[in-house]
Image (cartoon, rainbow, N blue to C red; front, top):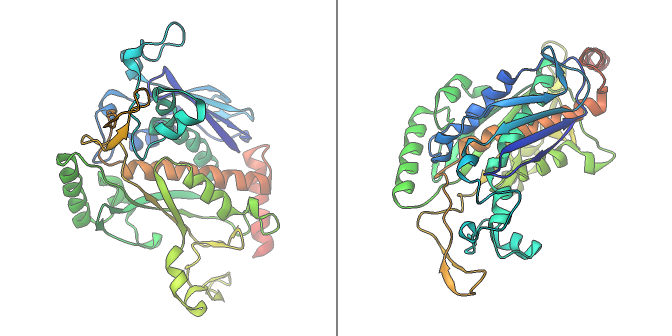
Amino acid sequence: MEYRTAGESHGRALVALVTGVPAGIPLSAEALEGDLARRQGGYGRGGRMAIESDRALIVSGVRFGATIGSPVSITIANRDSANWTDVMAVAGERNAGGAVTAPRPGHADLAGCQRIGSPDARDVLERASARETAARVAAGGVAKALLAELGVRVYSWVERIGDVSCGPYAPEGVDMRAVSESDVSCPDAAAAFEMRAAIDDARADGESLGGVVAIAASGLVPGLGSYAERSRGLDACLGAALMSIPAIKGVEFGDGFSVAGRRGSEVHDPIVRDASGVVRRASNHAGGLEGGMSNGEWLVARIAMKPIPTLTRPLPTVDLVTGQPCDAAHERSDTCAVPAAGVVAEAEVALVLADAYTRMFGDTCVNDIRAAVERYRERIG
């Protein structure tokens, strides 16, 4: 299962196309819109979220509430596009008034303009905008629907915003109800209060904040991925997917970078037979991944998100037309989008896992996939 997206931040709509979708997966627009609403929420979001009301329109691949084995296409209208018709016109003469010539440090503006030979960063920033991730979340909803049929769930929560930390947590210890009720997606009420205060302070100072999000998946069979072709290793695919999210600067699995300072006996998870006779790991320092494959334990990953590069107190830059020093352009933006990044990360993880399942167990129909998974579980005990 793979996906592609199209659309600009202030264009008419975003588009997601998901291919390799098995038949028979229950799917509705309402199910997709739950995660779209979670992505729009979160403390620290900007004015754009007050304008948009993301609704998923399923255009193809679903009939009578279930997938039919053909590509699923989804559109999400940009309500704000009505205010940008002159700037984002498909035809006609370029409107100089809509040009952005002061590239923002930390954004795709300058490198993108150098790449395509344009003096107008609008040609770059409209697609590089994190608004595109709404289409990813919709695509991820298709993957989540398949995984749910196989007993797999994907979660996320915030462990750090700025210098306020509440983790790390093991997924078994996370109260997902507390996460869902928190506007910063943090399971610790006291830390969530401090996070909101830190966001308020940053907003007042014209600044932005990043943070750390944890993502976990339960119910995975061991062996997803590949030890033979490491480019298809589950960790490699997950790492690439998570790093593709805008503003993500680091990814770790399990204990991640901290294992570099430990001895092997402190890092590797002993293999045991539990009380029910199942062979598993006594701990989960590896985060559910060994040798490029899932090992049957909880999949645990963390991503580090940098502060959003659009600041109300802009940094110095150089004008692309005049070559003179100036202040960076200011586009309407968030103060902090770390909780929203968690929803996008869930979608990316779900898409990688769904692809791994269909590669291993087939992609024709969900009943056949489920039966193949059950046979596999019986074989490995």
